[in-house]
Length: 439
Image 1 (cartoon, rainbow, N blue to C red):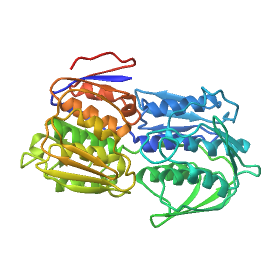
Image 2 (cartoon, rainbow, N blue to C red; image 1 turned 60 degrees about the vertical axis):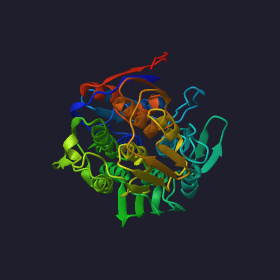
Image 3 (cartoon, rainbow, N blue to C red; image 1 turned 45 degrees about the vertical axis):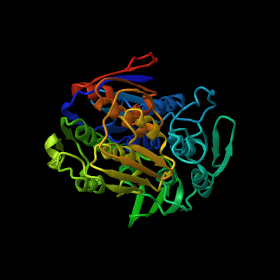
Image 4 (cartoon, rainbow, N blue to C red; image 1 turned 30 degrees about the horizontal axis):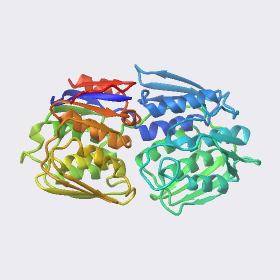
């Protein structure tokens, strides 16, 4: 899949932030823990990852009803059951396949899971990131895990049993997996060194609405009193996507467009917005929206900055590429460090193809940006989800025609991306098959 972009047009109009990808796919997994219907609103129904996960659920006998117009999803997992799947059915190229274990273990005591995929941004298998902490979660809750040639098999001969899960490092995925399994386990589970992001908070809220007994102590300890069976039905809206909100703000600044960004989750992105302010960006905002125009740069340019990506509530690694883009229109040298995923630098080489001259240097854990730079059209590849969106934005800001290969990477995290951009007056077309584009 590739995108053809005819850039150089300043976007104008209104764009609404969709439900958070990093919440929606987790809430979908939680919905499988009930034999009653679960209804999810503000759901990013057109995400590539959602399509992969709903396909897998249907292969296991679950029912998923999607309404793209109302952005809702209804899930009925009452007939969900583990079954032997073909290799093609097990080919689910997303990271969070491990979240599908709890629903199968709660019903039959066995789960067959595709190996985790996702973006290669770290130093390990399964999309560059290991899954050893997930194995630890299952084993601490009474499971035996075996790694087959085409899937992971998890067995709980006595059912999921509450236990102690003490993570050696903070982990979002591990925390989510532990929450899902503990919610349907028998007895108490104590989770220490949990990583409670806003999206994990969304997951906890849905599980509580479904009847789970979950208590959070401070910022990193969770106690779950499991009832030893499936949960009840519930209704809930997905929180707005903080990464998408930042994406539209940054794009408007770079393109010198005039955008109203609606459904901005300010409470979840306080520190990232502070960094924009320190870079000389003065946003016009109310309680739910941001209005971005060239007047948001009183000095006419972004001021050079340094920041480090890490854990929430700071600037998370998924936001790294957006600040690199900002640095390219800065009045001097900016530096972005990433201590959580220091190998997340592959996108820089592709982004450099859309920048005139030498303005980007990347080494493990550090990206140096020399501004100001000018964007130029070109042909580039996508390396990961957020890196793919960075090159899309650069191409949109370049005066001319560009092609981005493997743009499905961006579609994994941005709901209805092509439609939203077209509504802003942007010329972009996404194709399933590649064609040669002259630039």
